[in-house]
Length: 169
Image 1 (cartoon, helix red, strand yellow):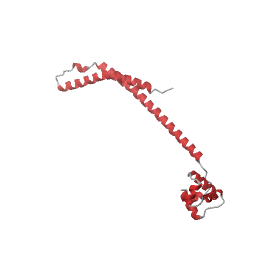
Image 2: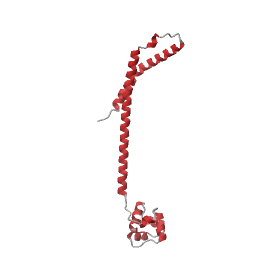
Image 3: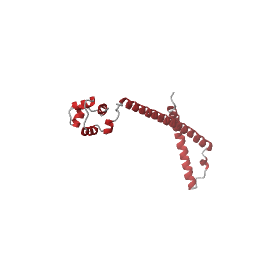
Image 4: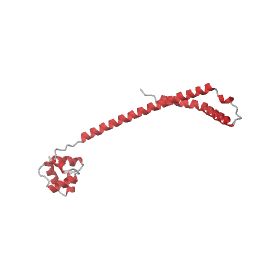
């Protein structure tokens, strides 16, 4: 059990027998004998071994330590798969939100245009001798003027955006 644990933990730490021997100030053959079960380290060396392998003595003396590289890779691949699914879901959600925003922009442009058309610029008949009426009329005329010129571009941008963000497939 100890021999198998020493070997498994040493390999999982990426150490060769020679490197571990240098850390413990012993010869490589000593490490080899421990791993083959031909001898065991004394208590002082067991403590040094646990420090060199950054593993508790109880783990070295405990049950068999199994190299878990395959399990680790499987767990990592499962986590990556979950992350990929979450990213794809987030991308789909963003696409849907953008699609509906573009459609809302189109509807808003049409609604505002219809409201302005229905009102038929009522401020044109106002008495502009009053300063407050003159300012309000000028502002409304500027909004009308800017909107009528910008509306086709806003509408076209909304339509193009809605088409580009439409669900594929």
